[in-house]
Image (cartoon, rainbow, N blue to C red):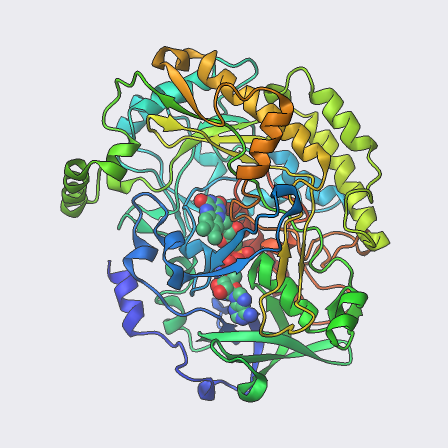
Length: 612
Ligand SMILES: Cc1cc2nc3c(=O)[nH]c(=O)nc-3n(C[C@H](O)[C@H](O)[C@H](O)COP(=O)(O)OP(=O)(O)OC[C@H]3O[C@@H](n4cnc5c(N)ncnc54)[C@H](O)[C@@H]3O)c2cc1C
């Protein structure tokens, strides 16, 4: 694993801020998934100097690199930030842990490694907010998906054992960020995958990256040469940054704000990560552009603290206004999780299974020995590689039309926070129309059941929530307090209408397909919970509004629709400032987010180079 080891000893991470140049062509705020991708691309021709400022530090412990199970990064608190959300009125006043990666590599270093892209319609919808000519579309992004990922097909053995379909035309083979399959998978998955096909309307697309709905196998962000996590740091930084004199990194530094000369962004102000006041504040200048890549929770915080945000909020916080940009921190979305019943398969002839890996010490020791010997076996599985991504038509065959109609007829302001700016309301109105169309489309997924391969299953994710939350600076302390994160979960009643369909549909999967031969018994909420009010009460008590996929807080939409950045990802109203991370997605893709973040970052790098 020389690539990683080499970088630990030879890098140009500056030890102290004293080593900084007085000025760089580009400063990237946040060395995460998007930030390191863009930094790599901007430094490759050697013509421009780039500084990455990252809040976290270089971490390469086994919690980061280990593949097995896919959750080691999430449970190691030294690798993440953990903010407590505003109590959620829709969820019995529960507060939610808002978690994201805080290391060099960002969330790509702690995520579940599931590699999925959305449906064609998702990316076409983004462009539709600008008009027919927009290059933000499925066709426009496909080359960047290909550039972003190096795809390694599953082994012939795995393909024949599980009937895996794949098509390399949707992928590339040059990136240093890898998408690969484990060498082994849990036997029950064959039946679980086939059972989706027993449901009317469920198809099996030719590849997980074909931009279609259905049931499919997908890769994980794992480097097949090492069977270690593949993420933005090994992919776009290890050994690369050290070899380029035009590429500097400063870790353990928290960016507080961007400063302006007139309306041009010129400087970034930062402090050591553990600072609690401004006494150690320093600044560094950017000649060409400052690129925000601090993620969907912190990019809006930094923009607002810099004077770019809703006028009223900034006034309250005593932040001098640079641009009244009401969309900064609004339009906040994530994908709710724990939204459908889970089942125990009481007749279970399949061995081994996912639970052996969690509970059976003999099995774990054997799997570890196999992995140590040749990097194969159960420990090459991350969070999972299969599941279904299904349309509302499939999930709610009787009510999808009415749900879409009622949603479309809503007053767009009705369920947004009181006093929401007109432009943001207009933007939501545009999304509402587009999302109502998605609800009617067979080619847009709303329901995702990801399989783990065990005798208990029920991991369901709601892909396109209609509720919108906010991320706002703490007016009493914009710089040093974490932002106030409010999911406003279930604030739009359409979400509840859609989610109420998830319970009967998930029951149908277990009780009316071939799965019924395994004598499934419902664990939660329980077979006796059938009345809509009971299911609703259960949802409010267990649902997590976050599956760690926050987007939308610096949306790429036209300015009159409350957008924060334009199609070139430049911040409206100022010069020399752009955003390239998950916060630019105007709405969620029908999938998890990492694959799309890398593709957006690859496109962003071309846009930035194009205007250099
Ligand atoms: C636990 C978890 C599991 C996930 N699982 C999956 C999955 O299985 N599949 C999938 O597709 N997606 C998954 N995701 C989502 C995916 O990883 C993210 O959408 C994506 O990585 C976000 O990229 P980003 O560049 O927007 O932000 P990040 O990668 O989070 O980068 C932001 C960076 O900015 C830094 N930063 C923040 N504030 C400051 C500041 N003030 N100054 C300097 N630096 C700062 C952060 O430390 C971080 O390194 C998961 C995410 C998490 C957290």
